Image (tube, rainbow, N blue to C red; front, side, top):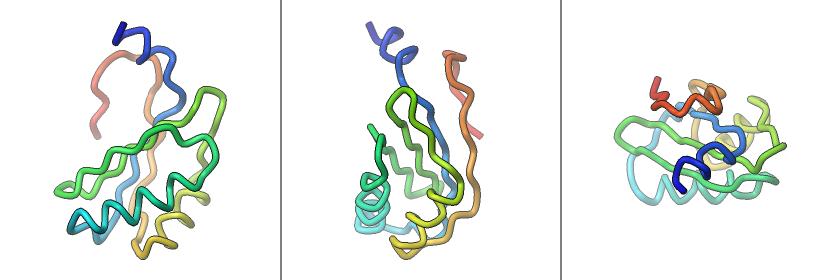
Length: 93
């Protein structure tokens, strides 16, 4: 069942965010990103300054929209990567 849900997941993105330092930072980023239509899940790795965003199938996140949400949360977007969907592998970058 886990494989099926991974296949059915929508597009995934990894955002490199400068300035993540604490759980409060994580909450601020999550709050802004969840305001974007279609966002289904967010995983924040404070230590690496990385945020993984999963959208609903058929949705899309532009770099400009991600940059704006991160800026509104008080941080700087350093990198934006759309992950290869359907590969089934770990795509850490």
